[in-house]
Image (spheres, helix red, strand yellow):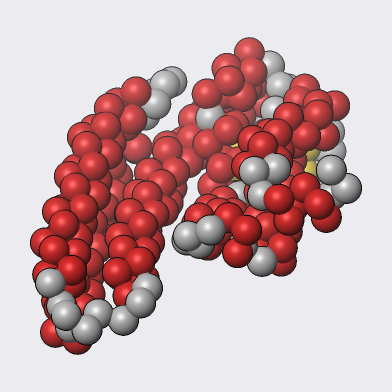
Length: 267
Ligand SMILES: [Zn+2]
């Protein structure tokens, strides 16, 4: 039995290595596209559709490998109770791992392109304004860390730009991408917390602490993301709380499927 499990582990590691190689290629291939991005993200997003398809193939490869391994394991005469379930859990883990790695690479690429869009939009909207300190036209600027702040290229004073047409167009396309990048770690924590919950055979066996962890990481993700998006699109600021609550509906819907959660929440 041990040999079968070792082959199973090796098969998973091999697929994940291919996933990493494909994503590294796609990331490198995106760089020249990103520098040429004009006003929309389609030229970048389109090739990533093919990468996503490739990820689907990798998930299939994991499923195929598991079909062979589970057949072999079923033939083992002294198979310990729960061994098949435990090994099958690795398939779910690997599937989720592929999703996490793909999402991270894709979101980083889209956010890098959105940086270019933002740079152009800020420059376009700043050009017609004057520096609050030296009075020069803001035709020479440097982006500062904060969303709508720019440094005057003449005196280095920080000016806050009122969003004009270009920044409004950017907010519709790129603000979400930058917010997703900012919340990438939180997204991963939420996704992993959800995965840990689903790995139980019986819902009633899931410890309440794990369910609370999913709620916490989910709220953390949606709060970070909505807050970051409002930094880039200030007109969304008044709706941040409302958006977090509405995004949490999906998390709570999942949690309510668990008796122990409903009981702890008082119904
Ligand atoms: Zn100045």
